Length: 294
Image 1 (tube, rainbow, N blue to C red):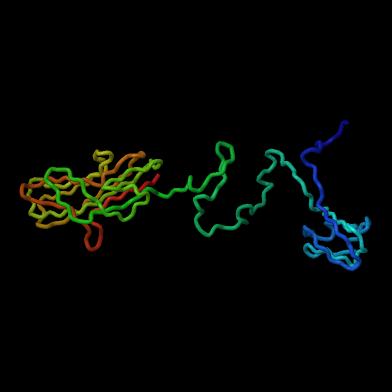
Image 2 (cartoon, one colour; image 1 turned 135 degrees about the vertical axis):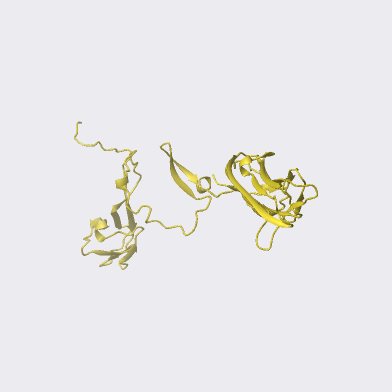
């Protein structure tokens, strides 16, 4: 048969109305419904198959239906139909929910988190147009791995010799990736890393004027990372002089790459001595730090 308008989907949009039966006993006037109607006009009430007048025959308070007069005795002789409460499943057509269909407070109206979300909390994202859920742990930035270590006792350096500084005291190590004065990038943690070192050098005798100096370097996979070198000119220094040299850089590291804490090399006159110092009273004198930043 021909018709005008949108065809009715009798398969996916069929609904049944919520209802409930009661048995009267001639004295009870209050009965409890499963669903609270908004008003007396949201339900139809039948007693002995006779529809009751919502204006005078009964009242509603929450889920309590109260008759003005007790219904007569009978088995299931009272029947209530929720006209505004349909029970059933309706398939929403694809792409039919648009922004205008959503409440303006769909986000702001929800319960607000009082602290940072847990790693297992989930978010919805669009992956090339496909909606997917993702754990917070996969997208949050924590700047880890990270560690800070320092020298806990003075260490002497030899002339014209690269000496690995033994940074044996850890201030913190988020991924337990620092051991034996060496940091190893953990599996799955490759990326951009910030590298930093600070060296305090004590020159124990009078430096001459023939170009004494100290160089500290960060080594990656056994080779000096040139941009992380620091230089300290010792020429003309007085006895027991102390000076600090620092350097920092950002570089790309892959899983398994190693960062040797710091190596020092000095050039000095014969008989002169130099050592790198441990903690002073006010600060860490010899420090190395690594921090993942991307």
